[in-house]
Each structure stands twice: as structure tokens, then as C-alpha cells.
Image 1 (cartoon, one colour):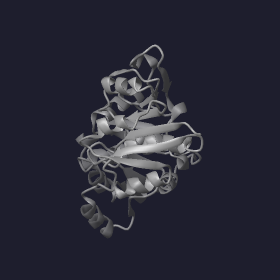
Image 2: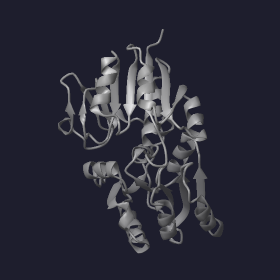
Image 3: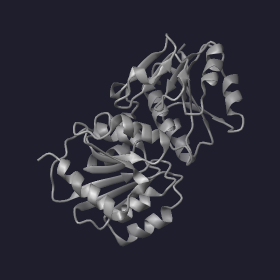
Length: 308
């Protein structure tokens, strides 16, 4: 009988999709050797589709999810937690059940009693963490929690006359940066195609569609599979991303990426990773502060980073 792994992560417009995507990626890696079950609150149709491809899932109610999830534990499971609201005390409650505990983290803002902590960000070190003596740390891109379509998509980009650009701000885009950045670049002569990915909870899709209707270079995608996202990354030369799961996926496809933050956990990643010629990264900090002229200037400067 296979050992059971219970994954606990959510996605929504408010918290984004990163926790859900990377936890499900780990479940996909382990599903052949373990009995995996995904526990989540208020999943959308898209999320249900993605979970059905990987493993069984259990829907939790947001008002009772802490207690109900604990009630499912018998002590012989491995539990994987991925969200910032799982406190040290909640970790202890899971450990008290007798379970082995894994935490996926990118904030290192609390003490961990987990058996294993995974953080696949560049630049993070053991000294960033407060953990128990028995806790093992898996840090850096060697432990990247990526969906399988991104694993074999790497290719080098060269100088061209025109470039394909990919713009995506994840499943959550509270400040509607997608529209702001599309409006800033869509008339640039250096661009050939502008691929734009939005999440299923993106509320400004009609405004975006209006721009796309007047410019056939803009291609909009919503609720697309990991395979399609990987294909779009491979078809693009540059990307504009937040410091999220998209960043790591883009690195593994060889994209040149302009990135920054608009929420606190992304700010932490920016401070750790920064800009990197080796990885093709240009960190611009606060994504909300730039106007259209700034965005065009940043993109034109980034063209100079491409190898001849």
C-alpha cells in the first residue's frame, strides 16, 4: 500500500495561484509512488480541472478549514503545507498527530517545526531560517517545484529585428498591472507579438479585449494549461512577470525576464534574487510605480542584454 501525502494549498484572486500551482506540481512529481490527495478551499473550475489531472482532491470550507483538515489526519500521512497563514502552532498540531510535515515557503518569516522546508528561490540560505535541529532545508533552483511541461523547454534567445513579448501577472492581479503594461508597450515597433496570460479570476478582461480587438499583435489567453503556458514561454523572447512561480518557470525556458513585485512576499524574492545576467533577469522593483514611458524605456534597455 502506498504511503499517503496530503497537500494543503489554496488559490484565489486575493492570495494568487502560486501556492496552488507549485504544490500541485510537487504532487504530480510524486503521484506514481505515493497516494496523493489535494485539500483546498473554494476551487474554481480551472483548479478542479488541473487537480483532476494529478490526484484526488477534497474541497474545504474557508470558515472551518483548519479544524476539518486536522480531522482527516490519522498520523501515518505526510502533510505538505503551502501558505503564509499556516502558523508555527498549526505546524505543531499536525506534528502532534504523528504526521511527517513538509512546508513550502518563500518568506522565512516564522519558526518551522516541519521535518522538511522547501524554498526554490535563488539566493536563499540556511541562515535565513529559524528551524528545529531535525529540520532539513531544500533551498535553491535544484529543488524547483515546476510543472513537467517546463522541464525541457530551455532554448537560447538571440538578437532579432522584432521580438515576441509575454506579459503575465499570475492568477491574482489586484492592481490591474496587466492592462497597464499592455497599454504601455503594444505600439512599440520592436515588438512582433504580445502574448498576454490572465487568470480565471481576472476582472478586467473586457477592457483587455477591447485593446486586442484594435491591435492584432495582442493575443490573450485565459484558463490555459501548463503545456500551453510553456509553449508561449518558448515562443517568446522576453517576459514581464512578478516575482512568483512564473519567474522560475520562465528561467527554466530560457526567457529574458523583466520582473518585480506588487505584494510583500514578492518583494522578499526581489531582494534575494535581484538582477542576473546569468539567468537573464532584470529586477525593476515595485511594478506599480512605473508610467508608460518608464516601461518602454525599461524594455528598450533590456534589449541590450541579449547575446549577439
